[in-house]
Image (cartoon, rainbow, N blue to C red; front, side, top):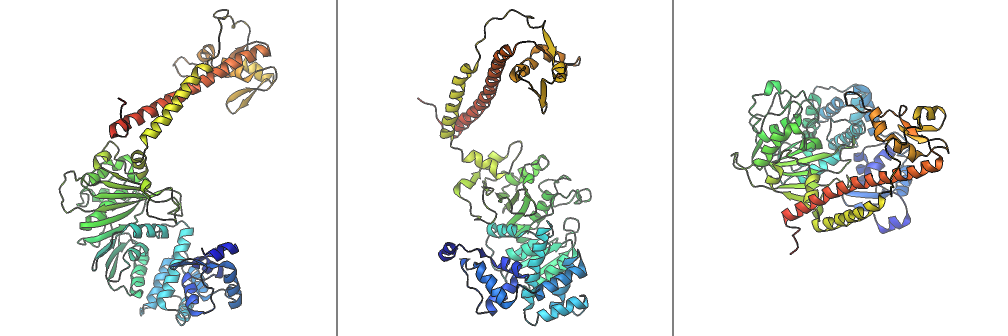
Length: 551
């Protein structure tokens, strides 16, 4: 944001927001910027993501009357939705086919005429870009998994290795090609993909052709059951696989040679996809997999995760910021793998870089701070759970043991000093059973309107009854025995319980003692938890060298 714009207090908008304001595609806004000299100049932002003063934009749209009429791009989109319904991607493929010069026309006449009119003023590639953006925005709002979200694409591109000329990039679940074509944006990179949905595969291929990407090949079919690229070995494989799918073909693929790390369970479809992409990776080649966070710790996948660590295959796990996938709040991880030169099964001493970005904004920097990174030796990961969740390892590696130990010790000492003061002063009574003779049931008290219930807890509803007195006697041994069945199960029977008859002053005296005992018990529980934490910190600090015994 520029200082002038900030001081003026005016709102700034992006190109996408201008497009929504005018009811056009982002490509149309880009055309306006090039075509009209009086289009507002950027008021902030960066060169590749400029921001504009909202007031200036609104004035320009009013002057051009572009915010008051439906644009041709919007009319085309509406016509496509009307003609194709839920199968919009088929319509996009047919539009791309017409623009690519396919002889067999598939578009309805109304849609075809609108496409033809638009191409007189807009380049075919810009038209396809604009329609693709509109489709992705629509899919995002609907929570569709048909496209990889823009923030996920940004993250994969950020963590992807640099590609050399002639490198091969593969995506076996490429959808409409957004992830594949974004990662492999260089014209001299070979792109190979496969997609189950025929319309999406066709659109990806035609879209690449219109973009001038001559070395892009997209096949159609189920990658796990019917791999169309059996001999392909890629320099980089990217994949945003379908999540939570149990019917991925385990029974028919039990003896498949791709399961070199172990046969995935039915519930671990994501680990089947991982081994599929790994099978298509050449030595020293890389894999970037988008994974649900639960794959990092689920019990069923422990053995496969252990093999990934043991063989030095998993090099980095990145926990992406909440909101990276806009359709749900579930966290998403990015697994970065590399196939070693050696295929031996011995333990390879490659530490795993753990990156936790869950405290960041989804649109913020993807470059982690030092305290968001932990480099974890494989031996620390190969325990009973083989948990690859970055956050759990960062908490261990970035703990300030001396400071934490001192703070916990101070807190524990204060609790212990307070503990004795909480105990009530109790004098000898008149002996066992001395309060049994004059008692009344809680049921009678409730019928008389002296007892009410705060949820399941009884409380006094009268000045004649003290709540702490009532609750204290309900927890007595006599009432506990009334609530215990012959089988030994316990269920507090409040209405059948009995309490002594006493004056309100006597009740308050007993209630004060019961209240002090409850506070005493609560402090004991806190002391128990603090003691456990203190012992854990001390043990870890001594074992790692961050703490040492005093001489």
